[in-house]
Amino acid sequence: MIQQEIQAPFPGFFFRKPSPDAPVYVEEGQVVQVGDVIGLIEVMKQYVELKAEFSGTLVRFSAENETVLEAGDVIATLEAIE
Amino acid sequence: MISRMLIVNRGEIALRIVRAARESGLVSIVAHSEADTDSLAVQQADEAICIGPAQAAKSYLNIPSIIKAAMACQAEAVHPGYGFLSENADFARAVKETGMVFIGPDAEIIKRMGDKAMARQTAIEAGVPVVPGSPHYVNDIGDALMVVEDVGFPLLIKAAAGGGGRGIRVAEDRAALAKQLPLAQAEAQAAFGDGRVYLERLISRARHIEVQILGDGKRAVHFFERECSLQRRRQKIFEEAPSPVLDSATRKALCESAVALAQHVGYVGAGTLEYLFDDTTGEFFFIEMNTRIQVEHPVTEMVTGFDLVREMIRLACGQPLRIKQKEIALKGCAIEMRINAEDPDRDFFPSPGTVEALSWPTGPGIRIDSCLYTGYKMPPFYDSLVAKLIVWDEDREYALKRAGRALDEFHLEGFSTTASLHRRLVEDPAVKEGAFDTTFLERWLAKPASEYSNVKEGR
Image: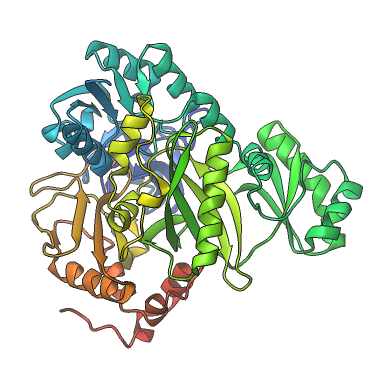
């Protein structure tokens, strides 16, 4: 079983939702397809979408909504579907 | 006069204001977020106070927290810098109601000039040319077609409550206008809760020229213009004073119109009136006013010799304007290059990092306004502007050469910046000729680098 830890490519604020009132992009345990947006990182007033690199189950989020990330921090764990 | 001033900002402008405070004999107190405790402004200030977490909404934009901090440190005045709350009428009012001086105009003026339709109406009253269009709002196609008689096509249909490029539709002819008008009204109603729209001529190729003014409520003076046409995504990146294209008669008319508008509203403090200038017809049109100090104010200081930040503090404290118009003369040429922590080779993606090594250019005619120091770890939460490299020389040709020399002396390790973009720009033939408009830079950036045969790679 392939597991991947999704890391922050650069520092910034992490958001699990596109806007404060919207639902989260992905719930824990949900199946995502390659390219699906799983969160947003705001760096220097620019918003960058974080996308799944392969299809699988998003097992858990290690980073909470609206928290500060350093580059390399683990955001979530993705598990490939066999 | 006051003795203790709270500076509610960060980065290079917080430091700029700390310096003005020191020279004015004021105690400077920097209000900062948790992410900015080690900033150069905090180090250089007399005192510092934390106003909240890294998120701007919880610190630099948090009015209750700022007012509480201002009272706790017994500030008598609050300087908002630029951005954040600098043009927020509610903040200006809250500061005043607490019994402190807001370093800027009254809340009423901020509100009046901040509303685009109201600012346009105010300019018309003051006899200042605005982009040709409808004098008020248009209700239906009948109204709109009457405007067309005078203004012609293409037209912009703009939402009165819009801003930042939102709520704008283009109509090229009568048929398009008839079709777009009701759509624009419905859209404005849905987006802004206000369906009022007005019409403006579409000016596709124009220069951005702005006039710096100071006022004391009764009298205003201008400090000539700045040319800010080199922009990327509506963000200025390279500014100069004076504009390379104005003849003396146009300059005089432009600057006098700015003074007329400032005096018409009884303006207090430092302000900037932005215009579109069409260099094919020589016409200029007022577009908006910024009721604060601007990023690019140093070029004006370099060509006039006055300190605008010190003066705006005096004026906000109720002192009369001590400078007469005839004492303000234009000397030489100044250029400001914005050094942003962005990578020009990666579509200007932000490049936060730590300053590993740093040496600034020095020598004749150079000014650096920056928040950087060796070892500084830049927080990733705010604007990417980290330094302003400003040069002055006797004329524009020399100023561009000096800018190139300054960029060659500038050395920064730790992250990418826009310095490499400026190094190419100052060698560009069109830039040397001053032949550009607000669309120039994006077109220039879209061309492959191999077309710039004039640029040497490396040094």
